[in-house]
Amino acid sequence: MINQKVLVVTGASRGIGAEIAYQAALAGYYVVVNYNKSKESAEKVCERIKADGGDCVCIKADVSDETQVNSFYEQVMELCGRVDVLVNNAGISSFSLFTDISSELWDKTFDVNVKGQFLVTRAFLPSMIHRKEGRIINISSVWGICGSSCEVHYSASKAAIIGMTKALAKELGPSGICVNCVAPGVIDTDMNKALSPDDMKALADETPLCRIGTSFDVAKTVLFLASDDASFITGQVISPNGGFVI
Ligand code: NAP
Image (cartoon, helix red, strand yellow):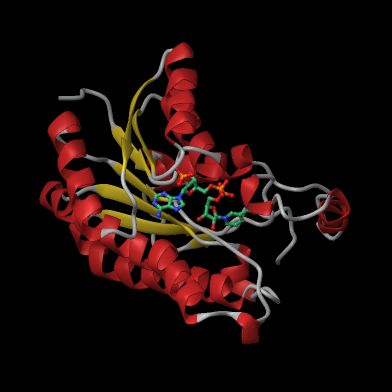
C-alpha cells in the first residue's frame, strides 16, 4: 500500500494531464497516470516524474468503456488502497459546422468527455464516501461556459461537465467531498495543433494577459483545488484563461 496521498489523473499521457501528473508528484502525491492510446508517452511522463524523485504508476484504460474503468479502479485500489484526489482530465475535441456533426461524432465526444467522467467518478466515489473525504476535479473548458462556433458538440459536452460538477458537489458535501471544475482557456497542447501559428497569435492578442495558456497554468489551478487551502471550495468553476473570458 502507498503511504503518500494518492492522486489519479485521467488522460495523463500528454498535454494538460501529463503536467498535472508531474506537478502533483512534485507536490508529494503518489500519482496514477492514466492513458488510453499513448503508452510510450505515458511511460515518458512516469520516467520524468521518477527522475525528479516522484513516485507513480501508469495504467491503461479507455474512460468511455465501463469494463475498462471498473478494472482500472480495481488496479488502483489493489496498488494504492485509497484515492485522495481524482482529476477527470481525459477529453477529445474536433471542429465541425453544426450541420456536419454526425451522430457518431456527437456520441463519441459525449462518451469520452461526459460519460467518461461519470464512469470514472462513479467507480472511485464509494471509497471516498466510505472515508468521508476526497477531492474531485473535473476539467471542462471556457467553451463550456461561453460556447465556441464550430465546436457545438465539444462546447455542449464541456457545459455538461459544469452541470455535473455543481450537482455532485451538492450531493457529496455532507460526505466531506469537494467537487470542483477547472475550465481552461486556450492552452498550448496537441488539442490545438490544428490551429496555425497565426490563429494562435490572434487568440493570444485577444487575451488580456497577451499570451496562450500553458499546461503548467492549469496544473497549478488543479493542485490548488486539491490542497488544504481549498477545503471550503466546492461546486465552483475556476477558469485559468488569462482574461479571455470574464
Ligand atoms: P491532448 O493534448 O489532446 O491530450 C488528451 C489526453 O486525453 C491524452 O492523454 C489522451 O490519452 C487522453 N484521452 C483521450 N481519450 C481518452 C480516453 N477515451 N480514455 C483515456 N484517456 C483519453 O489534450 P489537452 O489539451 O491536454 O486536454 C486535456 C483536457 O483539457 C481535455 O479534457 C480538454 O477538453 C481540456 N481542455 C483543453 C484545452 C486546450 O486548449 N488544450 C482548453 C480547455 C480544456 P491517449 O493519447 O493515451 O489516448
